[in-house]
Image (cartoon, rainbow, N blue to C red; front, side):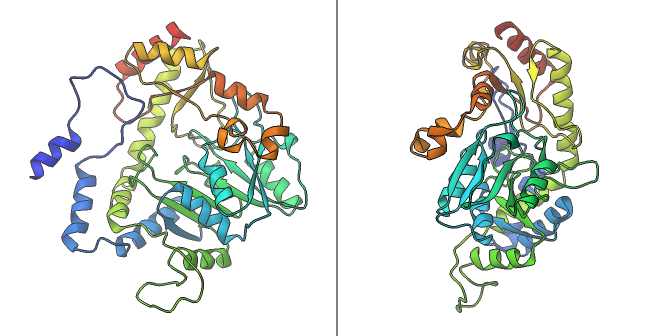
Length: 377
């Protein structure tokens, strides 16, 4: 049985020449970590989850942290614990995965979209921000494995205007600045995702960090049915179920043990793309004051949709960057969708392409992808 499982999960598909957009980096060590949880017969959230939290706090340098079932619910938990409610408004950059805005809507608040800095820099543009008495905070989203280029300025703006700074750091585990300060720790609260394509994965999973003890205690009630600890049926507050199983945490711990290897591999992939693509296209703006662990290698061409289709003919699975929030059909009735100006985020989407950046991608494959990109740009 074990050999059958190994063959199914870990075998390379050598019969296919197609290069996928991503592959999860899982191996025998990950399987053995999960197997140990089954052997111990404790698969709900428990001691392995506690150890996972400790290791994540070491990485981020945060005082407190709690696990969540996924990145979306991590953001929801963060907003809820900070008292964001119906009638409040949270500013969020117009280029990001839709979960950032959906989580704001989930707590009853309204996401207000703000354009990005430039056609190659997805950071929120502070010059486009307008606040009012309903504005309670700003959500910045560190995208594609680099920190927002203006995170320090956004923090100062929030401090000066008595706003909470929320960081969606889903794609930036392990990314720190020159002073060793981790993405997700600049503001009131920060969130991470461990989805299958993230730097480390638990399949699905999330994490919330804060240095505010009151917020941390609020999250403990919220995530565990209104009680701090399981095993009691007295519930002092209203809460929900945001727990993560020890099966997933075991996978996460195993992934952390390989984090340096993962970081080095991803950084090498980026260097190889720069080497083989050269100056034929523009690359995503990288915050050089922080480490860079590419979630995807993002480049810009004249017409992304056309280039992606042509690269597909070469057997390369292409992917666009995030569709602007203001143009999402589900947000068409939102006031900021109808009144804002979003030329940079529109251009970012029209020209941006995500190149495959998974562990195991060979230099020959990167060279092939680069040639296809240059030919079809």
